[in-house]
Length: 123
Image: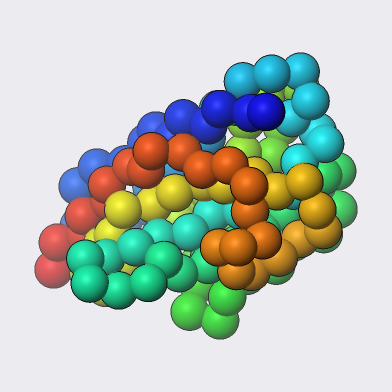
């Protein structure tokens, strides 16, 4: 089992950048595929980016390609989401998630979730 804690959210102006971090407990972090999702009220949780166990495979949804970058540091049990050129429509609660299977893009593909961190982008 793994526990996930996100941090780094906040208020930023459009065009700005933020780096989200997700710290995982336990000694088996490198066993998990990791993903970032976001959710706005009234909408389904949306997949943003995923990274394989070693970091060798990355996947992004089209809406964030070229703006967001996922990475991980297995020595620090942490996964990151670098967000650039932020837009007001990026405002959401951002979640990291861990999966004990190959990289997926659906919420059902993930086994563990953090509590989320709020990102607000002002125009």
